[in-house]
Image 1 (cartoon, one colour):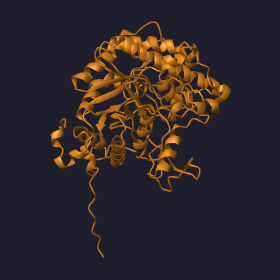
Image 2: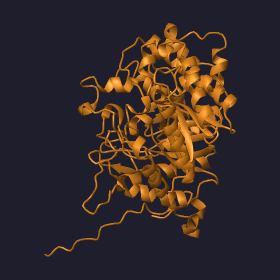
Image 3: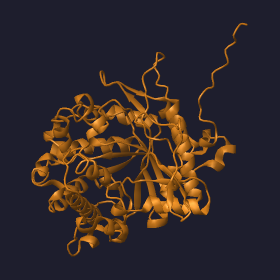
Image 4: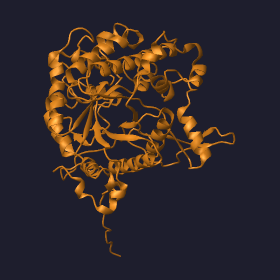
Length: 481
């Protein structure tokens, strides 16, 4: 289909549009789509090794082939253009660039990203590069991984190589994706790579080195980028939404969203406060006690580099009300509440209150770096992929994001997760998040109805969201008496 133009938006809907310059895109991650596990001299990541261990990934699936994006990127970028994407968030595979994690650089690996970036720019799509989306080089894991303080310097060396090569064309940079997950699930709960149950204190130390790596990477980008960079990161955290719009419920939800008193990693402030304020939150330090890391002199100053945007990956949320003492009391979503195929509750309001609470605390522009849903999708007998649930989900969430902006949150963009069906980590290929359907037997791509709907949303800068979701109501069937 042709790229749609804003002129196709009915004038009556213009009032619902998002702010001018709002960035509309979709996202992916290297290990989840690239394949080519041995191409370009690429070596193992921790995820390659994790996938080979029996019973850790559904059906023994691996990312060896994934969506074969390394060989099909031209076709994939053409489909992105057909969906009207203005921006594409991808990640660079560290072991494809530096097979041993440091030292030797793969010219062939860099060449792939050269070609991808050029293809995107030729299609009029702005590249947003993420330096780390979980595929840590196995060679460096053997040298201590994130528990080794030197990991921050290894990451800075890798960042230097990528920035030196791509920053004449890439202006938008994300350092690290979801440290809460690869630390919490990978270094504590064992559900993700590397799948080791470290003591809580050691996992916190790995998190501290991750934050230090982020700060050093920001320094590298700002010092070495050939074109003026826009720099952020992409954490994920818990979002609680208020059960009502009363002041008490909103305050309770804000406090609950930002609390750090539980001994776990799915938290906003343990990671966000050091990055923005240069300190760990007091409530978490008290809760963690002797397990909390002891920063070396200068660490917190290195971590707290100025950000141009604060990325947020938001999919769901809890619901709370204020108790008699004002503290948050969980409110059950209720029997039969909508859920996605991973059993996550559908909570559109999380895309209103999450960005609002984060912006209120940190006063940094927000970009939604991931949001989407997994669905039970297949190619229908008419050759199309009908996914009205994803359309309705995205419309409801985007309308709530519009409310966040109306509330005063400075939200600059939205990246749908994901651009195509892919390897969904420990869930293998059983869950489909994509706007593009991938047949894993043939690798044939089919733009889903949600992808075509999203193209119209983008062309209208969100104005078409004011209309119905675009699904066709079935006609009633006459039944003989």
